[in-house]
Length: 248
Ligand SMILES: C[S@@+](CC[C@H](N)C(=O)[O-])C[C@H]1O[C@@H](n2cnc3c(N)ncnc32)[C@H](O)[C@@H]1O
Image 1 (tube, rainbow, N blue to C red):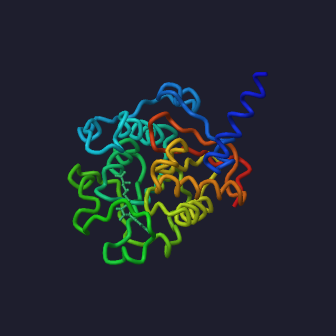
Image 2: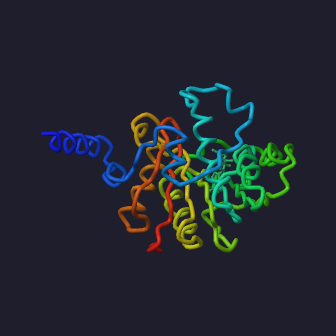
């Protein structure tokens, strides 16, 4: 009886979203403590940033900014990551969070040059001016950051092994798919990949979230990723650990 209920529930999620791999692999995590237990992390992140408390848009509902910062910060302050990559610098808020929570590492942050934006994809949620890109982390004097201006469509990562990657550039499924494959080729077992604007329950609400989830679904379907994705409730981040028998 119970198993029939769960099987129906899973089936209805798959039909509703048409994302069967995500329906079968995304695990919701209730709070940061549960995430720390699941990951065997001991450290809590420093997320003392005023902007995290602000509510500007409906997309900030349910303390989404804080939940995102908890995931991103916790990944960076545990496991001693040395090489961290952010795709999509924007103002550099997440860059600062990563740099300050992984002060022993270097954060490489990539953004398309504004003049090339028309050659980028469709779901570009924000297109800052050149002087705005990275402004926030520079104002906070983060010295362990290296900024790269390139359209990821034309970029092959050359940073050595990447310990942590935060993918938050163009949200088209093709970009999410290709950015991830290029990163996977430069990871090791245990490397962490995070996708932003990832939230299976919001795929029918926001088209760019649907697009990101479609990109991740294709990574499963084509065998580039396998195993679970952790998703902290109310965050917009999917967290994936590259498994031992990583597929490239
Ligand atoms: C949503 S914002 C990133 C926000 C930032 N990660 C944060 O949390 O503070 C997306 C950024 O990706 C950049 N972007 C869009 N398409 C890109 C591409 N093809 N290659 C590199 N960067 C891109 C945009 O210019 C924009 O600054």
